[in-house]
Length: 404
Image 1 (cartoon, helix red, strand yellow):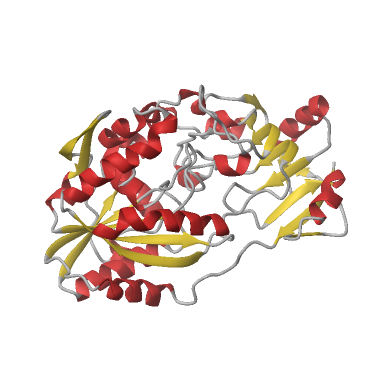
Image 2 (spheres, one colour):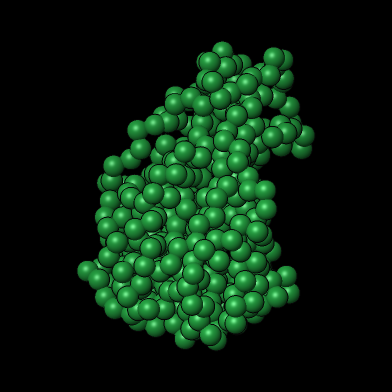
């Protein structure tokens, strides 16, 4: 199979000095800093500069008289255990030694109130603190659309509420989840435990582009405009109609569903409205990133996978995360073949070699490959530059040799 390498000229706007911007934004809050212990949330996503942002936020709090500490805040992820969630944040570079502050991991929660689908909970350490700095990236959600999607409110609702609030949130039908954020969010904010939020926006190359500090009473009002700003940065595929998409790696660090549904155009939630584009006939996933620690939620969005991906799955972690969401089809195991070479050969044999695309994952889309028949069409996209020479797809020990 002959391929062309494509460079997408995505929006590149990395902050020159992340440290300075974190401090500047927190200074602008002009809020009284709580005395005593202040919790900083840490999720499971692969957010650029997350260790630096967390560390500087902790230093700023300490400089202003607080005693900062970190709480893993990731709902039911990593087995829904305190130990598993602490290992996850440490794998992102957020360790006690590196941060200079303690990590307090627990699955114990305190009930704050109730909504139509169940109770609203908060991590016990967060509840017992003098205040919480909610830190997260603003991003399109993989299950639903709405004015508020994945960001500070979702971190409060699902992340800080551990598996208990995650179950309340996911008990709502998928098309009602956006409403659940607006119902559960005020319950948490009305508790008075949230001091402020630190919202991160990333550019098209997954680099920190903007940081916004918000007081607790600004979060609900400000987040919709940040979601819209995120749309302007969000990378996608350069064509809307593909026969085959080969995804080199999936995993929780790239998206909550392993593959970002907004990129692949498929949410895979039975009985609910799906995305209209892009339209992709066949999706193959080749590997599971080690940083996902075996959680392969989203594997069910693929039609084919390799044996090494399947062997890397921790079924218990994947089950707990999927069972909490209620969308069980997202952990179904696709057709499993020996390696990259067999997956690609079998797909080509059955579905042809036209309109193929290879991507590293659904988060990093600056460099991709397309089958030669797509080169002219992709080149007509103003943000794409297609290499002039084609290359032959080769394999070594069953793995393709593409360099992204």
